[in-house]
Image (cartoon, rainbow, N blue to C red; front, top):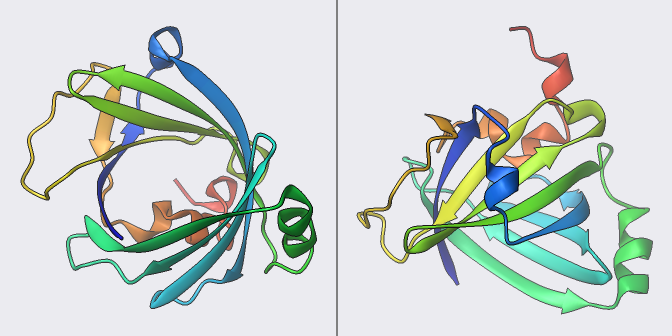
Length: 157
């Protein structure tokens, strides 16, 4: 129930040609408190309820509990979520011994693409594909719960 991951910006769309699968995701948040984020997600034809705890100071590790729920339940829960539903397409990209999850955001977060790699241990090494850009692990602006409140297209860059 402990999630260990690293997060990166993506600098090209070359990952699309390497992807083994892709799926549309819609998600909202019932609670965005950093101590206990509660997310409702529709991924394809499946619903999920996820609770995440506060990240460690590096942003690499945190508690995560996820349970599949009926699609109808997820649709109903999305209607009562906090404002700011996240829409994205997730690409699964095998690279080396790992699978990178590349999220291509749309809507108010359009133009943002983030890759995550889950690790078995915080010190685990992994190969980095050439399309991987700047690491943003621990930068809360890139947490989906924050993107729902402060969408990427509202940032001053």
